[in-house]
Length: 53
Image 1 (cartoon, rainbow, N blue to C red):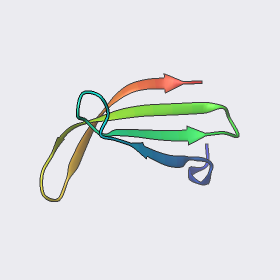
Image 2: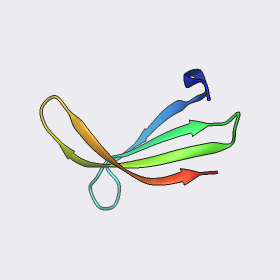
Image 3: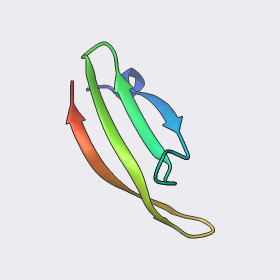
């Protein structure tokens, strides 16, 4: 799985006020969905909600 195959798509804020990060690999028809769980001034922490196609 080459890093160049993944595209980042950000959506937010969503209905519950959190930012969503989606990594999409169209060549392999896969996606990973993360939701922002916490943040500091310099770091963002995401929780993975879904990995699949």
